[in-house]
Length: 186
Image 1 (cartoon, rainbow, N blue to C red):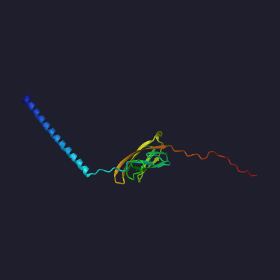
Image 2: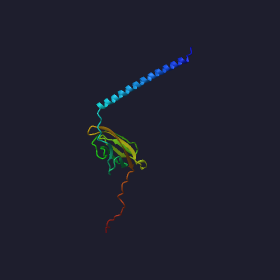
Image 3: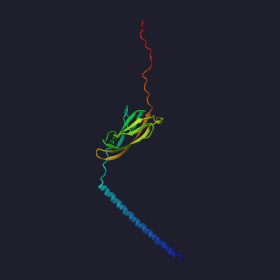
Image 4: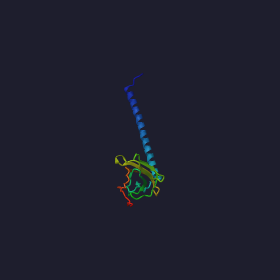
């Protein structure tokens, strides 16, 4: 084996540097071409795919049925009672129904205090099973796809709470008893 001279080693190092510089230059050119292609693709996509119109629906609300009116997204019921949750698409004012149609309704709720069942008409039936632990409301989330009357489609989610109270004992109608005697017979 022969030893390389300092000059030869320097020459090899310089050659490696030139090769590496050429590879780096080539990669930069390739990256620039890729960026141009991506820019062109984005421009073409904007031209052939018109922007989606804003949806009429801005949110959804859980509207629970019950003996007394409840605020949106808050359910309070007693053990043994049921409530129907009508998921309602709303306009930006948060009050006016948008008229959108629901699909892909889902409920995320898991607590032993109540059951939640999605009905064929896309409402949800909640049934109080046991008092909420510590009297603290339990959180859940409903989600749905809304198709607005203008055809725009969007996905929405809405948190809600459920509080199940102990059953109310029936009120006692009888307060006392009395002995009623008939008139004595002679």
